[in-house]
Length: 341
Image (cartoon, rainbow, N blue to C red; front, side, top):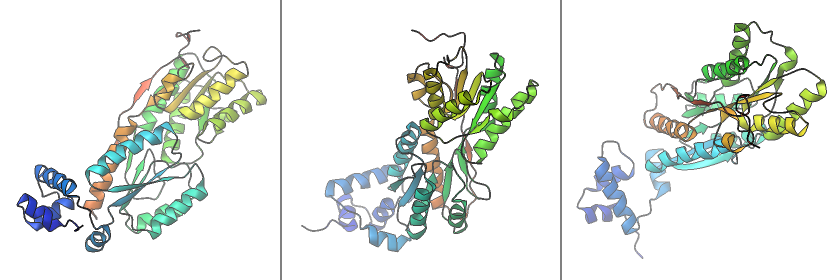
């Protein structure tokens, strides 16, 4: 069977070969209606793009990488959905790399990106600084990179995030205003910008109310549920007095809450729990979790649009994007809202 060519599509639509070629390469100067007509004809005729030849001709692979901490997390799934939607519109393939919260796996993926023909990279997590040198190397080589939530110091790369300080301040303020004074600050495992902003928000609220910041209540943890359970055990076993927990994300917070209740602590009567990053999971657990809900799919979409623009306009400085997020006060911290039995 004869291979369908760009010339065949052009003849079928009575268009020039140049117009069809530029449309298939996602040339912004081709009208959207014309592009749609050309792509429809390409599908109808069974056109298969010669990727290798196109890559050699344009110097691009039309492939980007997306680095996530855990593929199974509710955050990653929604972020990737937003990214994929945009990339499909631009004819760009997405290679998703699951680091599984392991710096060594992350390092392997970054080395693969360094030695492969990727047009850009979206980093949908930044839990540790172990591989900051590799990130900087890619950044210095000019690889377009967009970070989600938080970046690393010294990198010239835009970040798509929510206002961590404002939302964190509100959550801790809510805990204090509901009568809590000995609030545990469960930080993430890194010194990323987001972690620092949340830590500053915690300290500023405590200072605002004249509440001392107690060293025993400042804890670092991983980003999974087991880490949250271990935090709860450490707190109870240490005998330290506490009446609230402010955690880096809902997965950790749920681990804390479940373990506290298993060991006889009532939530929220004895201890309130709140999480900085939440999703629909916060509504599904019992008691429901107070959290900051970021529009994750929209964040993925905006990050993808930003990366595409960086790829298409190399050398142009691109600014980060701050997206608003909603704060949901639920049963885990609202002592007036008793969980239904």
